[in-house]
Image (cartoon, rainbow, N blue to C red; front, side, top):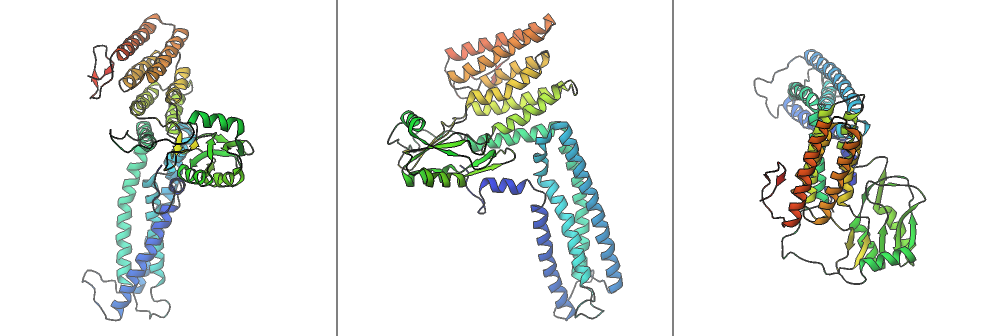
Length: 469
């Protein structure tokens, strides 16, 4: 469970990050604060309390007005161009990568900072323009420090504009998009499936009823809590739920995990014993966050689905971009390699005494493997290059597997790929290439079952598949 930063829970931070107004608003406030400082210094200079360096000299109020007017007009014009370019980039992303990829672009910090820097400069120039000979100041007053800072901000905006042009050009390229999604997948894996603790680390001894017994009681005697809102489950406050369940000495069974769609009025959880169901159910609603879309916060499968979506779009007859699909397969294999060497949580959460308090549908290794391969296998059933790359990627993942259950899931997926290839590929030479990769993979699977896996760097084995010494 991630800790809170700056008083915001993870789901709130994600919601704020995927907007185009938070960073610009922050920079706008910073511009107002900067103007307050520079205006105070200008006031002291005008009263003779301090002096300016010789290179800061703007004597004419009319000249300062014309300069600031030109700066403000130019900045707001460029801001309109930047906004237009951003909209065009979002439109292209929606058409090429899918509408669900738009969040990856709207949460981009570079775009948000670019918009904010131009807004902040425009506001600073307007505030400075309004102080020239206005209010209780005589006509000879010129805020020279403020005008100079406005010029510096404009020069800084020129550099920001150059960066933005480069950034937006790179960010809409398919390899960059795929790599960014893979990076998000890697971060989500690190958060949800952390590395196993070292031997001898602190253990929590279980007390009370067993998980199996509690599941039976929840199914037969548990009180059902229904969802109060429809939408995708984005965040679950597990620590909060454990505390609530411990306080009422109950056990909560969550029927959905982050990424699932919950429907208003349908079962969301079960509570046993059922006596405090009303109080626990009310707290349960406050510990869940639902929304119109999925997020990566507690749902690493969402990143897998994003890569799969790009791959199957590329394999569609309208696009026919096999190389993009192969790139997605490579990055999916990279993520699955990381998942294979991590401990997958069992979906059981305990309190400090070790008693079971929250039981959920834990993440499943076969489920994540199938989500990565099924749709691509189905979309590329008639493409030998896709089948070959899928087989090779399974060989890479095999080198990181740690138990028989993982290897069985890999073998099942390899068998489905081979059967789909037999049904879809007509050229016998192409089919023989797929068969050769399938035979290499099954041979490596047999070898891995006979020899225990040891930690070490990945090396290329004689079969061409990744192995460990």
